Image (cartoon, rainbow, N blue to C red; front, side, top):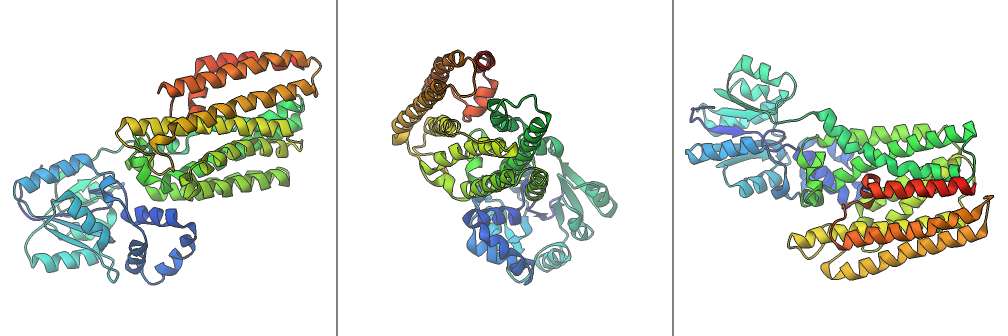
Length: 471
């Protein structure tokens, strides 16, 4: 580590914090209104500094929740305790830079973009030369654009450097300290797209099974293509949702470990992933009936609405979640051009409304255990717990009633009496989920819980056997 007591200039984005304030503020802006996306290119025409100022005027970033490079920040505090002068110099807007300096309380000066000058590269160096008036200084950075500053700095501190940056910095100045605590970006990206959640899209195959076309290759291929398209589309949605939900995720006991919230993955890579996965999903959908394309498009639009504002509206959010699951069934039927029956859609809405209530109940329970009286970013309070469980249990039992009415109709089955065992199975399953939820033993995503729950697996096998016998 460095023994020099030169003033130390600290870059912000990627150095002090594992994130980027420009993209943090863009996400906060789009969270307020997605239509700001159309204004961003127009603001950029006036220059990056002006664009950053316009964003800062309209969007607040909770800097206390930012993911810091913890080891480096601890070292900075040690340097400050030794009496060293610390300067925060960043291309981010001055509004955010000053808030960060006030929050951390270790910086003597702040240099940042002010709406007229974008303080990066050579422009940052010019301001530093004016500040120090020939006095030597050290500089901590992480990117190639920092090279112009390192060439004039007496010493370099390298933090989580981009590829080739550490070697390049060593060629122009003396690197006295380095910090690198990053994991694999590929592993982080895979976690961000949540391939384990693709199992939810298995609902796509339900219309195929119920229409008795399992042995028809064209129907099976159509369902498989629909499954792939929906899974890729869902990953685009997950990325977008995580980008727009950074503040509340960072306050959540488990979601704060998600790649974007924790700073394990750059926000710009997430934005690229949102667009790329959406284009791929709709490209695949072009090979399927137009009804499937319409269902996929509606699913995406409804998910955008949910991510931006509907998730904050109590009861509306759980209705939308139930509708999004039901749309998978509609899309599965459209992909193979069969009818999604009234019984199937009603059963789905009641079942997934109940599961959505479990999700909110479990999340609210966690917040209450942490001493809070409401669910951050959602419209629920501690006093709502009893009502949530009542509505969720009632909805689950209504799903069983719809199932019983469907079985009573006979339909396409040669031995429909074999299906009656499905009713007690469903009653037991939904009751058990709510029992575990009330006890505080439920995962905050009941779908993930059921995928991992061995007892659910056995119940599913018995239910599948009942269907096979009935056919």
